[in-house]
Amino acid sequence: MTKRLKGILCQCLVLFVWVGLALAAGEKEAVPVIEVEKSTHDFHQVTEGETIKHDFRVFNRGNAPLEIKSVKPG
Image (cartoon, rainbow, N blue to C red):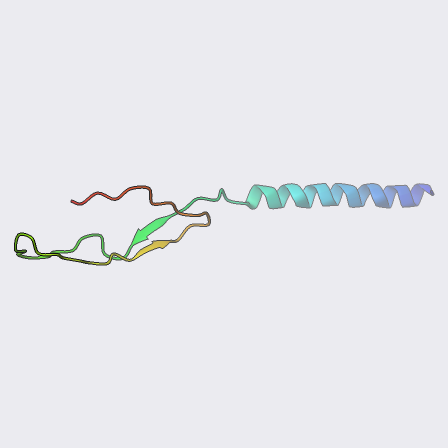
């Protein structure tokens, strides 16, 4: 292998390492981000024993899976 070819290969290796480090530094940590369209709902007056229902729209705006492990009424 010629000296010139070794120099070119060495420069390519340095370039690949540098690009890899630059890309890795630019990556953001994968995290879920919850967004609730409307976080409250007023049911007004409810008769005792009456079944009521409301759907809350929940979105994951992050880049990792969102796990909802529990929900508590207000």
